[in-house]
Image 1 (cartoon, helix red, strand yellow):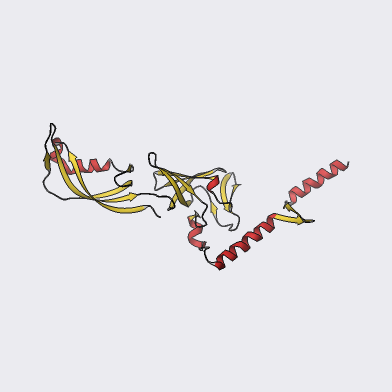
Image 2: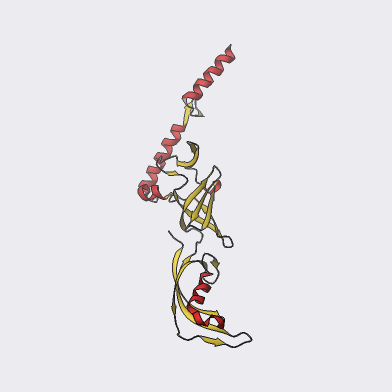
Length: 232
């Protein structure tokens, strides 16, 4: 998954002299306040850190309330999603209008219907909503699945991501890792067009030069009964 990076930062942590007896604990408490919050200084969300003090002695800063300035080096894991990056999240809710998921256990993401490609159709199976590919029946997105999507935007204040399933390399990670092949080559494009044409032929029937939607046997029986009732 994209959006994750390691960063080495040289920091100065300011502590009150009352914390001088246990500076290490005070430093960890200060750095812990940065976790799972968007930081403009790091251009992302701090997920984890490790600390290496640079000096054994702290510098006392002058002032009415003198503070201790402790220099240290911190190794940080940063989550910084940008537009067009590929992210993955666990699907927690699914409706006809949107797909909701959680990224890395703390950031919420949503893909609305206008950002879901036409290939993926919403269906209700056994009382549960799912998205199924029209071209690959094994490609199913349901609650509990891991979803791969493209970032459109990030709300830094509430850590909410807007995503898209328009690109072909997005969807259920389980299916993509097993079956997805880059459609950029001419042979794959030709094969994909052939599949699309076959699906369209299955969904439509041409009668007397007019294209009509394909109906199932149940609908045909109902229409026959309706005509008989009208004739009577």
